[in-house]
Structures are given as C-alpha cells and as structure tokens.
Image (cartoon, rainbow, N blue to C red; front, side, top):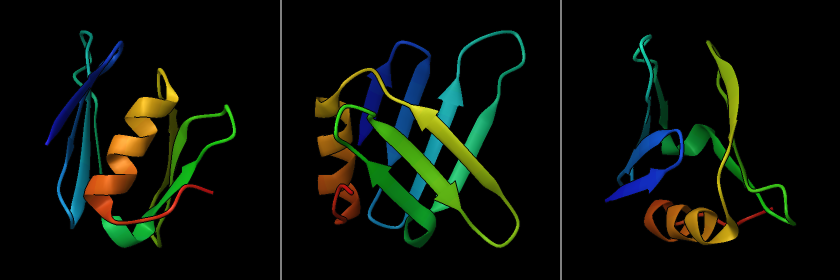
Amino acid sequence: MVIEFKSGKIIVTAHELVIRLQGEHHVTLQAQSDAVELIGRGANVVAVNGSEAKWSLKLDNEAQLRLLATELGCDIA
C-alpha cells in the first residue's frame, strides 16, 4: 500500500515500512514492522527504534496513522 503525505510517500507492507521524502536529497527511511511504534493522541507520529537506527516522522493526520496501523497489524499508542 502507498500512502501519500505532504512530504513524500509511505510504502507499507505487513513486514516493512519505507518512507521516501521529497526534495533534492532524496531521503529514504526504512524499518522492519517489529521496530515501528505508532503514536496517536493528536501527535500522529511514526517512531522507529531498532538496534542500529532511531528515527521518527510526523504524519499529516490521524487517518494516515490508522491506515499504517491496519496494514502493519499493530496498535496505536
């Protein structure tokens, strides 16, 4: 599934999350689904905390967060 947001695209499967940010630097963030935490309550943040990397990204709205939760099969904290 592909979810578009104002800063780029999110490509999500049941096992992996890839975020491609628009702009001249062409930043790509990638994580396995077990390292992803979805934070709701108005924050709408995707947080990744793995053994080699730690990053987070604020989404545009809660609907995008709910789509991610459905596709990844995880809860929103």
